[in-house]
Image (tube, rainbow, N blue to C red; front, side, top):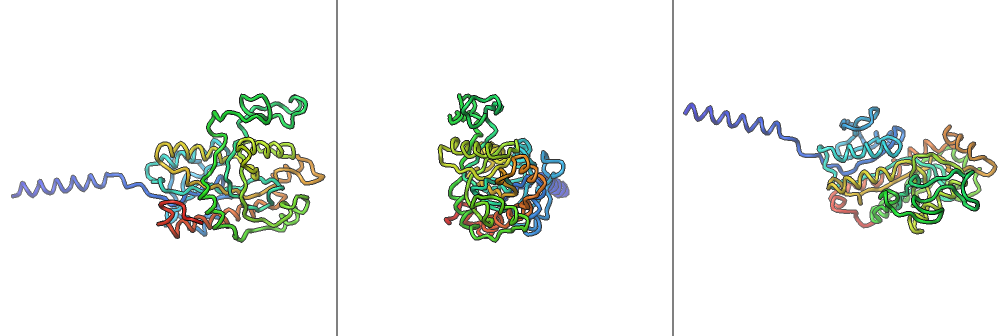
Length: 343
């Protein structure tokens, strides 16, 4: 009897130890918000109650943790530029502590904007993500006569010829149902503006640039070079049209989105995420070209100094617009869990 009791105790202890050592089930996340640097992340923290810090190996030293809330919404500060966001996004998607198979991803960052398409503080949901950096380049002083730009597609003979998509990251189209739902939820969002932005936009002749900020749909162009000016702006418009077979409309310029998409696509191929559950929101902190009478250089320097006054409204409007999508996902999770509800 004594032997049986000791054996039972030993078996119970073994089972208890095995249970203690068993890995916890992965935590399902409803939404992962992807910001690039702290000013983009900050507007989300208090209203979304993102008070839980979860360190993730492979993230930036200055932003080493996801910030999460009790509703299983987390925010990643991924870093600026293609390399940083790709590495950070992959680190999170490959972390076995998270179940991201039904997670919605929201890229929420600031950008430059074409004054023909919007103004300082405007919030633009993207349908197409186009990479402007994968190209041949000839210095404008050495390009053939008659060319509008020294940039042209890899392995093509000149501007206007669409390259083969051999890098597989040149262009991506986001899910239309999610795009339309995001637009429907946020079209009447109350946007932040500033006195400086109101004054600065009056210097532009384009009607869209002179209006108050609004929520819109137009497409985003990504590349690590922070370009500026009318000539490169024309190239941006033409390149977006070329790479989307005439369907895309260039609107915002940023550095990261194709790289983030590629990281998520790799994770999707491994069964870790559903890349169709990605939405991209870019808000305008500056114009991508000068106003009449201003040089491209002066415009760029004004933008980097924050003179246009769009930086604070742009960061605040990330939450004002994107937060409506995130809140709806959380509030109606049983519907969103199986797919995008009808608008």
